[in-house]
Length: 396
Ligand SMILES: *Cc1c(COP(=O)(O)O)cnc(C)c1O
Image (cartoon, rainbow, N blue to C red; front, side):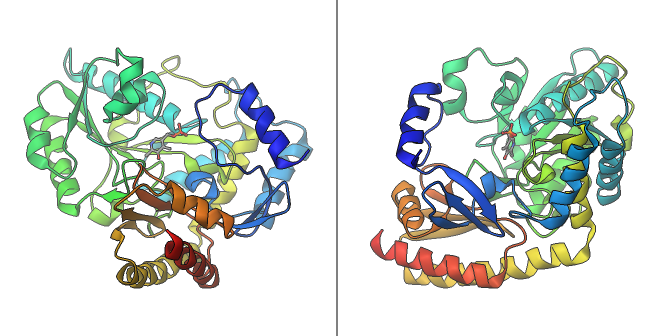
């Protein structure tokens, strides 16, 4: 089948909740993916900040292969599996957290966190079950996480939302204070809003949230699903504000492409869940846990984060130069390899121009170009991307 046939069939077969770009991706190697017609693309999307090791990483393949050849991919959480225990150990070593829960996606990790926060709050005081999140945030698409997502456009058609959520202005501590009360069990925040437009939280804002949460027996929850796991040059983006978290939520890059999410909890909430409180049939099965264990092993190597720091600062400096050449670029956003370029008009056409020239980039909202490449990207690949972006901007 050629690409167009696949696309035409797909359009008939799926509910129409996506607006796919018209290519069918088939294989990958390093930082490159190929479509069904053999066209090659430099991939700075990485399956939306997921494929952090790029494609065909030898160690990754070996780790996953070992499970496949052992014959047992899944055993449920009725039993233990050593891959999940090893992955959990690495997560704990890499964070200042105490325990973890594995699920299959970001939204599920948020759902687990909503339940944990409510049970924690209720144990302090009846009715302490309210959660503050931020305007323009994104926490997922299931009803709980959608209720947490402070963007009415995503919610409107699916009302009523879950009760007990309110939305503060991002980077505005007074707005948080006006909503906070003795019934607030948790505040959810992204250190860098991903879908919301690559906007970074001010260190001071996060530090003040920490103080407010401490004063009010409220959990400070960092949604690091997109910004975590080395993407900004540190294990988690919030660490750069020199504060601690009560809960950290992960997914996207954790399985290097295989679906796994995690909720990490600090000591003070490490005993909140008891047997039967929560669960997941697939969560942390042997296959995905082996993948996560390998990814986390790579994150433990100091050279891995060093590459992110060096390449991202090179990338960002180069983009600043590009910005001086093209005044339609209004702003360079994000941190590390979580990059946003704000334009004065919608970027879909720019994304199409890049693609036809062999470069995959994405958007975050209509006017923001999003670049979230594999964390193994090199300066040489950055140069190639910049060349294509420059050519595309010329026509944009
Ligand atoms: C992607 C994302 C989610 C949702 O994760 P899914 O795996 O798609 O459910 C939640 N929060 C943030 C910050 C994200 O980037």
